[in-house]
Amino acid sequence: MQKNATSRCSPLRRAAILAGLAWTLTLYGLFSWNAHREITLTTTIASSQTRSFFREFLMTRFWNALHGGVYVPVTRTTRPNPYLQEDPSRDLVTTTGMHLTKLNPAYMTRQIAEIADREGGVRFHLTSLEPIRPENSPDPWETVALRMLRQNGASEYYETVGTGTAHPRFRYLSPLYIEAPCLQCHERYGDKAGQMHGGISISIPALPLIRAQQQRIRTMLLTYLGIWLVGLAGLVTTTVILCRHERERRQTIDRLQESMRQVRLLSGLLPICSSCKNIRDDRGYWNEVEEYMSRHADVRFTHGICPDCARKLYPELELTDREDHSDAAGETGTTAAEGRGQ
Image 1: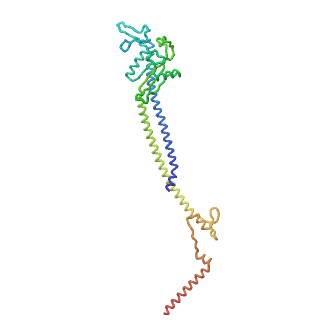
Image 2: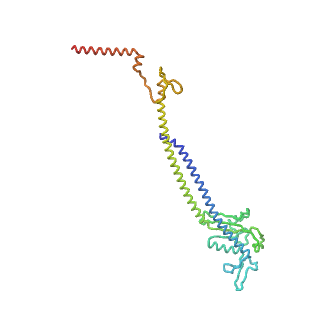
Image 3: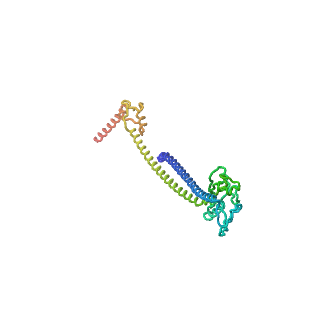
């Protein structure tokens, strides 16, 4: 009976296993999709930051170029630009005797980059595949980025590098194009307006962003894990309850079927022949009583003969019995008379 009940619950258990797999795959898919969105969000945040740095940098350079350069005092760290030595207005002396030197956009960019790297870890690098200044030569990553920008004409190139190290960085590079104010310096090198001439590479620390991203993904993982466990617990509980109800239902059905079987066996009108006593079954065939009852009732027959049938079928047995009874009665009476005579 226990084995039968277990087999009846097997379809429910198989359905529960399939539902559990579907639940697991669904949550895994949702978690993977949201984790990918978190990674994409981190990249979007980093690219937005570096893009903002680039635009501010570009506006500052454009302002400088628009004014033909700016003059600053000559100091130990700000020396006259050797690449402007052909410019007769590179160096000036004020009426008070202060020595001034012209800062073109490139020179100003270098100084701002040094301050940004020292103060906030943000690195700017003016670079080009054909640099005028050797220090502006691109590193391997910048070389790849500049070539890709030149080939496909994209407006920017960025990615996170060093993710397996202790100090990953987000790198961004956007191209620089020669504009009319830039020709004051670049025309002597054969550059033309609208021509791509290198770019500005920006690098920021990626570790804070990556740690925040990992924290969000961990929180999300724990949330999805809790939802998964609650769902599985509900599925198991529901399956157990349904199995118990199924067993109870089957037991009730079995009891009803047994009762109906007993009713069919022990009740109803049986067509029976008034002469030979054969019984007609549901298909219209006549069966001997023994055969019919053996099929439809939990009984087995043993054969004997009743006194009426014995007298009818075997009358000689009745005469023998009477003679035996008469002889026995005579002997009893003689014995009694003898006893009184004595």
